[in-house]
Length: 255
Image (cartoon, rainbow, N blue to C red; front, side, top):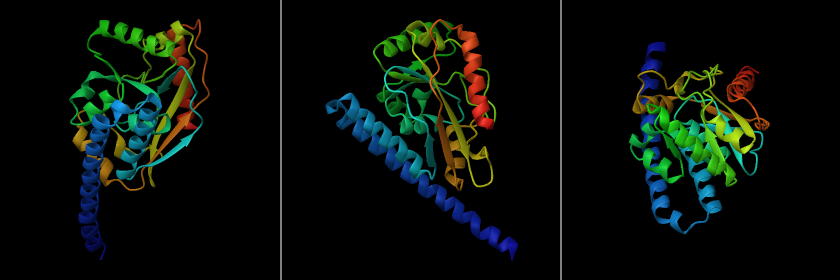
């Protein structure tokens, strides 16, 4: 009896994944249409509302429940988060739709998503070029001086979830130079069996399509976004500040 039940549930899981991926494709096409046809006539607030709605919708069609705790800081802020999955941007945009992201240039090569991420005002960095970091620091500082919220992943790559990787300090210099508060954000993906779900782990040689399939076949995925209290950055040492931010995130992950 048990082997028979296992045989019956496997095809259902595959059908569910195909259904979700089909809805993702339609959602991507809808986002591209909105960006091409509606964005030119929208003010910044209107664009941010659409970005937040679309990002929450992407999580929803993939069966990921979003739970947000805390309040985004209004005005200029450097939003700093741990990095787990390609879904992190959607989760943070759903929680903080007015944030602009700093992302690695590789994202531009992702089918459809790369075009959408660029249209949302993302700043791209080529991590292989050390001099490009200085250019991005200046761009982030300009955005902060203009009163914007900029989101960064200081680990520079995705980790497995339970503990953040070391934080790179370069981009924090933009907040220090402009005396802009830094708000840590803590991302945690869970499911019915795991506090840190293995379904979203996006490390090593895992491709975007492989990761998408794992997420689409998962059951009961929840993404927790905890927005911690903003921290002062003026006159701080950037390396010490990076370590302080990492400790805050690590403590929240294990709380």
